[in-house]
Length: 154
Image (tube, rainbow, N blue to C red; front, top):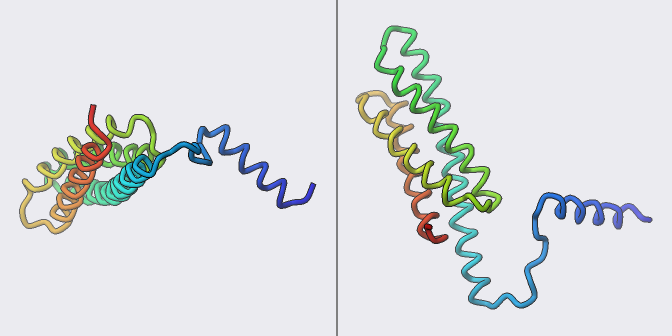
């Protein structure tokens, strides 16, 4: 067996065990293909927004730790909110990027977490780090809600 054939067989096997469908069914209409492409674009955009927000929230949580240690106790609430939001965003990014069956559910939850985190960060005026986090949360919330709407909420 040549190396190329072996690699293709291994790829097909890996796709099969991971549940990924490598080929579209032959009877897929143009309308369904277009709908799939629109869903895929919304999901990829949402996944990227979630990933961006996760990194921003993790960074903001670190910022809040430093401020809380310096005695600014109001940052304990934002610290916890940022950590929770980052966790939701990381999970949403992974599930949505692979088109998982729980994409709508995680995005509904992620949008709520982003709303709460954004609101918490906005309560602390004059802090550019907190403002940047709130902005990313608002972008992610919007992307999640758009993805839910695009793919058809329950």
